[in-house]
Length: 99
Picture 1: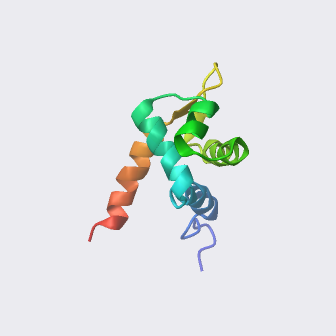
Picture 2: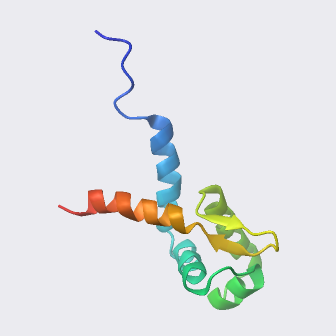
């Protein structure tokens, strides 16, 4: 048995991808991504007003998106979608979603 082989599935890669995919499996996180994509950078009060949710809850969801690497904070404190990452995820998902 060859013990020099890399694992069949990279568990760290799967864990990282799973975090990103969980961001899309939540209606309010998905709504935040859609707002930022269509509106461009936005601050917390704008997102709270658009979603009609509490500031604490929206902050929690944004933090999840930041930790997933899908949203980043601009110097003025507003939030922006990482369009390149979203495009890369879309490309990867097409491989799995098409038959």
